[in-house]
Amino acid sequence: MKNLMYGLFSCLLIFACKDKPKENKGEESSQEVAEMEMGTTEANWEIIFDGSSFDNLKGYLADGVSEHWKLEDEAMVFYPPKDRKKGEAYNLVTKKEYTDFVLSLEWKITETGNSGIFWGVHEDPNLPEAYQTGPEIQVLDNDKHPDGKNGTTHQAGALYDMVAPSTDVTNPVGEWNTCEITINHKTNTGSVVLNDVEIVNFPVNDPGWSQMVSESKFADWEHFGKYKTGKIGFQDHGDMVAFKNIKIKEL
Image (cartoon, rainbow, N blue to C red; front, side):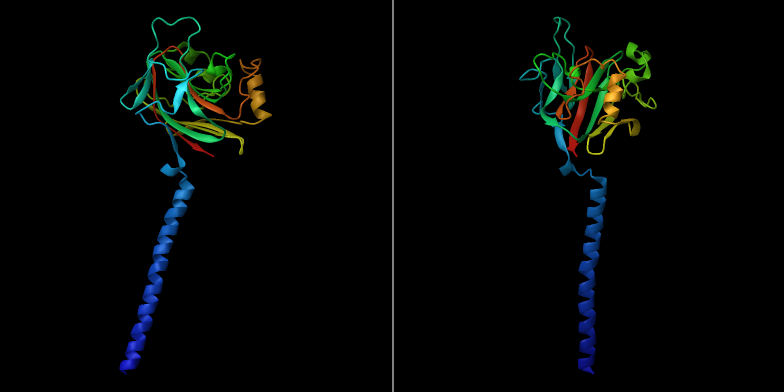
């Protein structure tokens, strides 16, 4: 009887030990699947600006960053010069180039202000402005800047002069707006999510891309939108603007 009881106890112990690892393995697997589906773990993201330095940025056609860009409260803030000389511009660009990506950031504009976020920027000494190559997602005070009344393709979140936002979801001037820009040539997908609402989507490959450009002010611009791989840019449009929490995930 003792041997029988001992045998039964041993079997139960073996089964219990087998089941426990399977349960833990299942839990870990579910967590891994969830993380893969979300695709937003910190390991996926490259920090462009964390509020502490301009290490990953530079001036367009410059080696360093202009003194007109300041570090304040973990943000980079542009103060337009009062004595600007003709032809001077202080756009910022990333040191690195990107092709397919999700760009995440926050922006804040001052009253009557105008700025923008570029991608596909190609630095060329013969092209003094980043917007001559890089398409722009608009940053704007929709209510008080003239561009806000100059057609919806010029309003905040628009693919400038090409695709209008489906709705105005901007926060009041002086408050932060969260923005996520996706450019993916593999899936022919471009989109803008502003304050958690997708407001713009567009093709990034031909023939759709060239068709949009041909119907815009950029139709005769030789270099505009020609570079699938290029730098991310932040515009000096002569107004005070701030950006923070800038990160990018390559696709």
